Image (tube, rainbow, N blue to C red; front, top):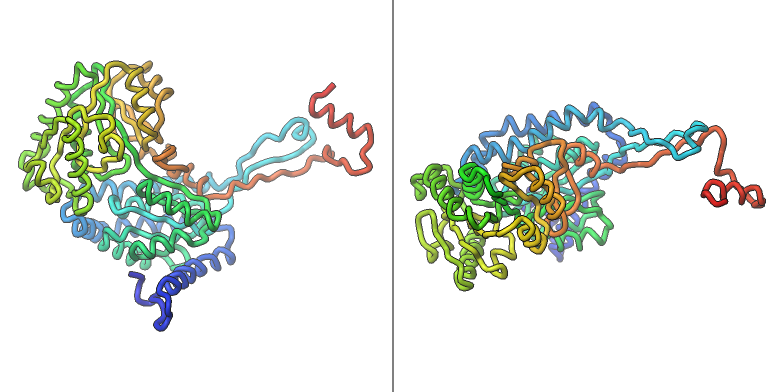
Length: 488
């Protein structure tokens, strides 16, 4: 729900109209502040970034507790890494570099304007008010990480967190209110109706993190206002095991990512593609790592729960569909296929050679299901990956420089990590984002600053005005234009 002080007025006949009025009022408060200060000084930007860091660091215990309450069970280290270290690193990086980012970027004028004294540069101007719609799976991290670029660029922000993690959303609203004025950063808490109205507000930019189907609705709503949209989605991020790769190292990453947050990470592992001659050895390595990391699976505090009933039912349905299409399924934690939909401590389920047209090979899995697919050659592998869409990430373990280069040039994804999973997402100077079904636009580091800025082209006329061509147009003018074009 929206906070008590902003409840729609009693007596309004249409709750939707009342809700829209409340949201428009909160946006208007920030828009008025933008009109008052259209260009945010460096000192103010740094102060906001400092406050954002302090807000997260000083509320660490409350944030961990809220996430654990919403998830049912979520390891403390998962909260620290994804919900705190991820955004804090972004804020600190922005704090170090925002002064340099703000400086106008000199650009060389075209010949012969430069010889005559013309000056050209790009001036980065704040957009105004940026809307942030964040998901439930990393409730704080994916709300606050883009905020670093938003604040560094001198904007104000309104955040709509997910209603599926109500404790995290309520705490987010509280700590933001304690750290920022409402016309700087505001958190709007509410359900699907609030989200729909939020997406339809006339923001100067809107960033949405979530699923592709919801993203389409968000874009339709934003289109009415011509609001630019950045989408951070997901897709089928493959881990590729090259010949000669360290199978134990690859299996360790795959198992830890698939179970650390219940496999519910947009840039995490979707499935594994391994050479047919290494498949059995890799599967054996996965079994060893599972036993090593989670010896008492049923009572293990290091598991991240699949806490949403709808999520469990969807994952169980993917398994049933794979079995119906002839795949061999191995439930690697406690339980069996028939119990999956009821288990918050959802087991790691390995699916051997699922059919290419099975649901789990067409949809993003977003959970602890692990399809293992064989390939015969790198050429065949690249063709299969291209046919499967454009995911948020791609991971290659092993391989020489030629194989790495081949996959970079012959596959699509938002980002790539070699011999690791998600490494590129923690590199602050690398732009983060997707392509095609996995999203559009970039944030993170300097890319985030640019995304949330208006790159304003500026030109100063040279001493001699080459463009002074006023009527009446003489043959001499025509000759001069021909010469500039290069026509003899």
